[in-house]
Image (cartoon, rainbow over all chains, first blue to last red; front, side, top):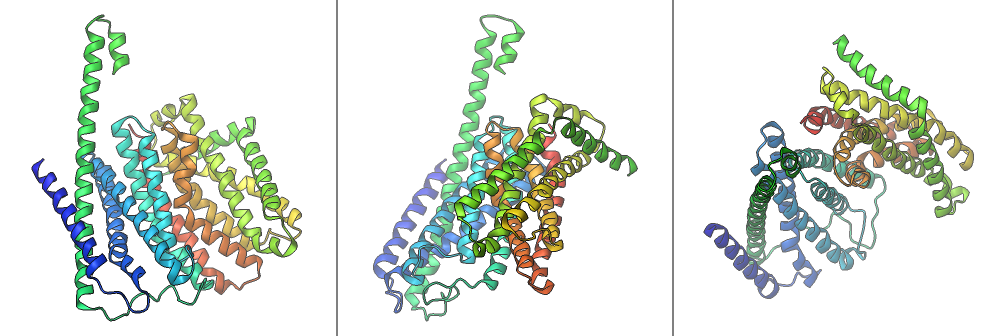
Length: 245
Length: 224
């Protein structure tokens, strides 16, 4: 468990460093000002969050072919952390959109797709919470992890097609005007650092969550054994033993 | 191969015969649809102009929500009565059971549309029963029922099942809703086929992908 502790310490240290750099060292962007600083972590959270869902999807497929509880723990951990990063993406995007597009919410392709993805993975967690039996929970979660992930590109496509018919531009800026500014070297450096940091934070949170699920599983197994032993001792009737199982 | 289709037919026949005798699912779905139409009429406080632009949206929202009701009953009832085990014990391919369940739910959902579409047309005072609108309903409910049958098999075996199905099904059905509303709304507004074709392609793509995925993973959902 030493390595997990070190991973967490490294992630925390790097997060503190890059946040400090974003706040104090990164220059103010000429046209957008301070709100542009959101992008360092907004972009990183967006793609790392999707990578989290992708891992849940891949692990789900492998689980359905070759069941193994470790795959289930990994899938659950990456879905949870992916959900967290997607929420960060949507919230920071919304905060940026308020001054930039003059609205908290617009039916922008990416913003809408991320919001629907959030709802899918909230459903994924609901599903996990509604099943007691660990192998059944793992199988159903794998199925929903696969179905949910496949629907995301179709959702993206349908919203993009809809947008091309109804260009919902609010304010003056268009939804596509986000890149293209000349980046100062220090900015580029912090952008890269923010990506690395987010990947490391993702890895640390996932590893921690995985470890927790693993321990939870051991506790459940121990508890089942204890219940079994308890019901076996006083009366040796097979009926009570089977109830405890 | 012939046996395979016989199994599908038997499951569909069993479900529809049970439904014809009790009529409890379809009647509940129809009443619910009518209530939704009423709720939308009041909530949107419809005037003539608003009606024409929202008709497709009301039609689709009604179809999807009443569909959830039917899907919940379909496998939920089997689970309650313990008849799901019986079905699974039958010496038949699991995918045939899936297709049977899927087809019987789809027939029920379409049967509800047979009532909803004319009623909406009368209330809204213009004809919704146009070929392209019906095609869009058929294609859209196909994919929706395909995923819905799989996810209802999932939710039927959990603790919070009636609540869980819509939570699982609606977010993955966003492409159906989007393409359905756009294609039928466009057809009602008299847009040419060249404009609408993309939405129908999206519906067909969704149907193919999700039916294929559902068939592949159904075994994992019902097989113990």
